[in-house]
Figure 1 (cartoon, helix red, strand yellow):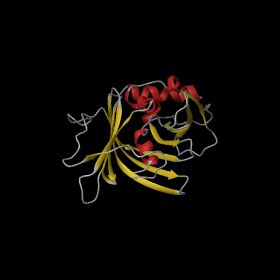
Figure 2 (cartoon, helix red, strand yellow):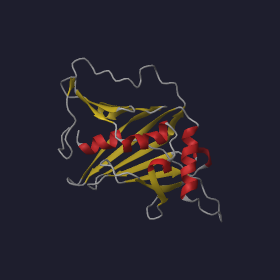
Figure 3 (cartoon, one colour):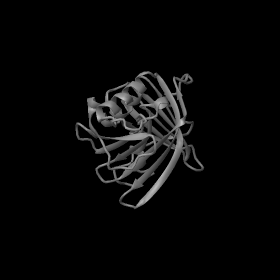
Figure 4 (cartoon, helix red, strand yellow):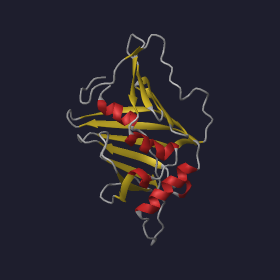
Length: 235
């Protein structure tokens, strides 16, 4: 698993929303859309949905795709269970991110990495109802093509971060899901792009997660290793 996949998994998650516009109605401004996002996630204590992830690696000119289930719980806990590739798990807390990678014919390996400030800020939108303006500058981006019923917020971290320089949040503007994120695009300093598509139809608000869901227990025989080096292309 290379750095692109790690970054997208760790930085993974944000949800946003927009509102459908009636004929003749003025479009929302950026502050209104940011407030939709805050209000939507502030009403929840936990979340579960299906996602697709598409990671484009600039240096190799390739895109890799993943699928899985995302679970969150306030305050600050997130878990990704991948079905493609089967068995991969990423668990993020306020202090660290743990990635488990299964290995064919073996028990797999896992590694720990500190949770970056940028990653926590993004996850905080979902798990702590953190206002977007606290950690990001933001504006509406009318230059990108958005899925029907959404608007796009462009976010830039207030403090430089090696994980990303730009995030596009595609926010639902539909009244029944206003403020929920349907898609998130992340661009890092090297021009790599990760896109997360969230299946809002599968979204469960305030599900009761099983005890221990956010506690990582490595499988018997799994080997702890060091995280891949930036740009190594490993794993």
